[in-house]
Length: 429
Image: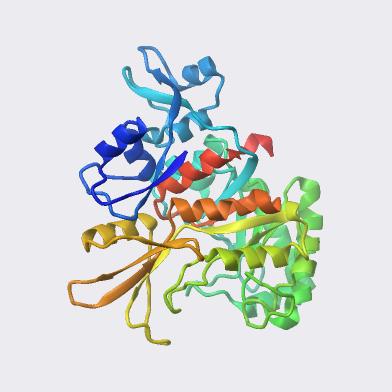
């Protein structure tokens, strides 16, 4: 795999001649429309096929997988045109393998709302060890608020991806309720009811584990939260269900702030099987323009977490989104628009601007002026920024990557991930 940075005058045809890779493959791996111009500064992933197969009459994807001794998941990952579906036709060319050394094993997870479309869901599932439908809530009486998760669970299981149940204190208005957390954390009868309902849902729905995400927990409830997570672990582990907890991106034990004070890294790390570091949202919807996950900030959170929690328990959070801020930024007034990496590149193309790359933050960005004359600043993720983040996982010996979230297209992210690592399947857990 190589990452090519588009120079003025580059085209898919010129890249095909430069690298000896079909322009159709380059377009698929990067989610490009061949009819649209490339953007100067745009990062493109180039993979080099080693073995290909031309589909013959009577071939099926399963028979091709058996012929070459590879899994269906590998064929799906090597061939984005399949869209994660078992459909081939005579004359079609499939990539069996690429010119790359097998990377170290990694586990991956991504969160998805029940509204996700089938095309996006199935095209991404082969790259995931886990899929986490978002989200189960609960009432003040301990009853679960159940999402429409059946389709996502069935899709995940059909392709060798393990579904994880997600429990949060998210309310209908979209905020996390510290009052609801306080209520359950300080009422043993309510906790018993909630844990019983969680256990029943895990069994009946076919989930493979539990992911708990209580945010903005009161500082005075920090130990009670860790104790609750410990109760879940002691109840669910004997039944074969691991417990994972999401952690705010802290850089010290005594870090002030409503997001941080209720998360005691040492206590939570000891209470659960694994944790997810939510290493994103430095650049956020109401904040000043900056990278969503600047690499030095991400590294600082990881290094603090390692002083409290073993590396083998830690997942690295990875953002799958960016922001477009109107300028000038005014604190309390300016609101950014959340966008995908594909939309960011489309904006740069539309307004004829080049994409820049911040070497310190390890993140792409650009500015443009809209039709009304207002300037905007955009920060997003690309193949370079994703490669830099994913490199932290083997560097620190972490478990894997957890993506927030799966709802935006970002084809080259999955190509980079697959080129660097061997993604574990549910069967390997």
